[in-house]
Every structure is written in C-alpha cells, then in structure tokens.
Length: 426
Ligand code: GLN
Image (cartoon, rainbow, N blue to C red; front, side):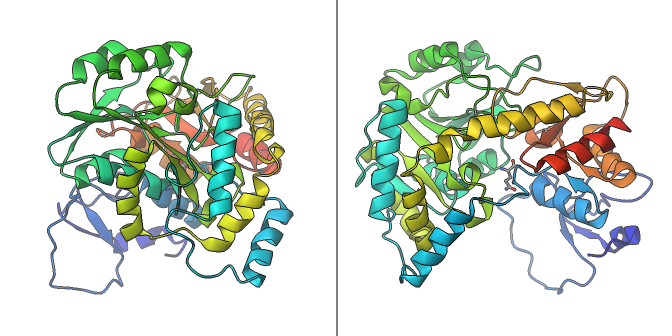
C-alpha cells in the first residue's frame, strides 16, 4: 500500500460485489462486513472456498493501523505500547538464547514459569493452581482464548458474552458450530444486566465469557457482579472463560476481581492472561491459562495441536521477571498516570470522556458535536486530523453507530500530549 488516497480505487471486493470504500461514501474497509478485500496486485485464483466466517473481514486493529500509516497519523488505536520494555527483559531473553534455550519448550510451558505463575496466583488471589496440571503457557492470550473455547464448546452449544466485546470471542465460538449470545452492556456505565443474563441461560448454555478490566470500555467487575455470577452459575455445568489480560491495570486503588479470588467461581473458570500487556511486549505472543485440572487437560489437547508450545527463550525470561513482583504490581500506577495525563490534556476538547477504571483504554463521546457515524468520524479523524482511534461500533456484532471512539493510552507521554493536541482541534 502507498500513501496515495487513490490506492483505494484498486480495492476489489469479492463476496457482495459492493464497493465499501470510495471517496464520496467514506466508511472503513472490510472489518466485520460481508466481503473480503484483495489489493489490485493480488494473485488470481479460480478457487472459491466456502467461508466459515463469511461476514468477517480484517480486524479493526489491522484496518485502522493500515489507514493510520497511510495518512501518517498518530496512532492511539491499538492497545499496544509504543515504548520499550525494561532493557533487562530483553537481556534476559538474549541470555536465554545464548544459553541454548532455543528448542521446543514443554507443551504445557517451561516448568520454572508455571511454578512462578502458580505462586503469583496464590499470593495475589489466594488460589492454589497446581503448576503441573492447572497452569499452561500459551502462545498469546488470543491462543489461550481459542484453545479454551475450542476445547470446551461443542456444536449446538450457546456461549454468552457481553458487547461491546473484544472482537475474537464470537467468531471463535462460531467456528465451533456453537452460537454466540450477545448481551449488551448498559450504555450508561457499561455494567452487566444480570437479569438479562439469567433469562439468556438455558440448557444449551455452555460458557459465559467475561472480561475485567474491560476492553474497550475500561469497566471493571464489582462485588455485585461476582455475587450475581456466582449465584447464576452454581449447580450448572457452565464454564466461565475469564479474559484477565489487564489484571494488573486497575486504577484508583480498586482491586482486580479475578475469578481466582472466589473459590466457587475458580472451580468452573478458565482464566486467560498475557505477558505482552504486563511487560510491554505484545509482539512476543506469550500468555497463560489457569484452570482446574479437569478443564485444563481438555484445553491442552487443543493447545498441543495448535501451537504445541510457546516461545522458549521468552518463557525463561518471564520466569525470571516474575521473581520481582514490582514488575507487575507497579503497572496500575504507571497506566493511571497515562490515563490522567490524557484526560487532563483533553479537558479543553469537545469530547466527553467516559470514566476508565482499568485497562489501556478510555472512551470519548463525540455524538453531541458531530452527526457522523463512528466509522465516518474515525476516518475523518485520520484523514483530516492525522489521529487514529477505534470506533466503538467495531466491538458490536451489529456495528451500530454508538457516537463513541476508543482511545488507547498505552503510549509514551509525548504521543499522548500530541494526540490530545490533535483531538483538541476537532
Ligand atoms: N488487544 C488489542 C486492542 O484491543 C489489540 C489486539 C489485536 O490487535 N489483535 O487494541
């Protein structure tokens, strides 16, 4: 791709025959839409496979990342730090490589890392996971989510999840021949309506996917959520899949409600977490799952055939890094300062900022000063103001406009100041 706008004209659409992107009708290309896009110079093939995900396009993070690069925009879209990790961590990986940790790791993960994770879960959340049978290191939290859903959800099952949601949950459920059941979070404070959950649960409900701290809204689970989730799932065979990748990014002194803190929930939960988010290395693709042995043995059956194991030198380095609890306990303050810096720098803007209680994200409302859809608004921010964000509608299965955009503050302070300066001009 080049930075020439006319490059869009080279897009050809296969599927609906509908041209999604042109200059008179600017919408974002491809994500969540019934088409796939090939660039002008793509190889032609007579093959037309029957798609398993016919209505899915390229993820919003990729689409916005490409548009951002084309327009030389500042990127506050993806939840990926633009600053470095601790140099010692890189040194530690390099040392592991030099020392010969370059072949397959054990399928379940390097033993020292599994033991360190087990000790961390016990110290922080009071739950003892057996390092041999209840901790698995996976090749990214995304792989952990995929392995867990694929291992535990069967064709015809229903899986409840909450929208807005991270974009991978529902497609993974559908790939199992199961039905994702979306429940909308309250548009006021993005809380869960548990009565709605109660009425959605039936004999086919196999899993509930939760995510706290929440991407994209920054909401966190409360005591009340824990109480209702416990009551609704007890005496059922519903598995809870808990995406806790932002477990160490909870603000204002509040506590992270891990499923591991609550024995009645822990016994039916698969917790998925991430080293990438915690150590500023999202490209290393190492995460982990915690779950009771009965669930974990099924998850490992999928993991072993999907990835077999995660990268070895990184695992050795993370085992060393976990020995210093400050390496993760300091993260909440670190990101809280970034959240506050961005909010302060945007205080004179026309945006209404919604509270963020955790994660790398905050939502900003624009609907009171612009009639555009989220997609159109995001595109205009990229083109006219060189600032990239994510439309909240991308986190909904119906892509309905919400009047909100997601800002990522996992960026160095200069980027946050400059991003805010550009947003203040809108
Ligand atoms: N979790 C990151 C976000 O929400 C991005 C993940 C991805 O790019 N697939 O921004």
